[in-house]
Image 1 (cartoon, rainbow, N blue to C red):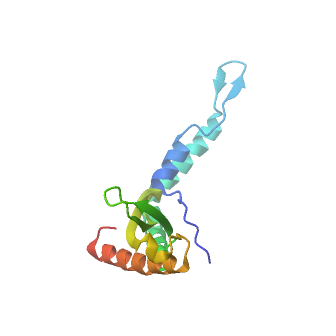
Image 2 (image 1 turned 90 degrees about the vertical axis):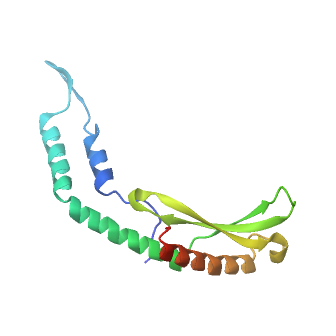
Length: 149
């Protein structure tokens, strides 16, 4: 199974989605422009069902979030970048990944890899990627334990 790192619509997003103007307006001869009453009733039924099942939706969202977070811990999607220190003029590599948060948000996790010359100045070098994966897993584990993620 491949997990897609995307947002999943849960309670707040569903309420927002169905509370908006999703029903097309129609032209009537007598009253001008209006939404059909039956569609408005069905839309309200959807909102009421979502509200009634808030606890279940929150529980599902929490479980999926834990799954996505553990997936990022095991298989982080890492981006290696070259950065230059303005004071010393030394180039070095950093790596980052994104930690999933509630509500479809995400937090950047960034780590220092070392001097660019240690990796032949190649951000795609196997050595840079290997070091990045090892350091990223250690950083994520430490930050999870500290509660900063």
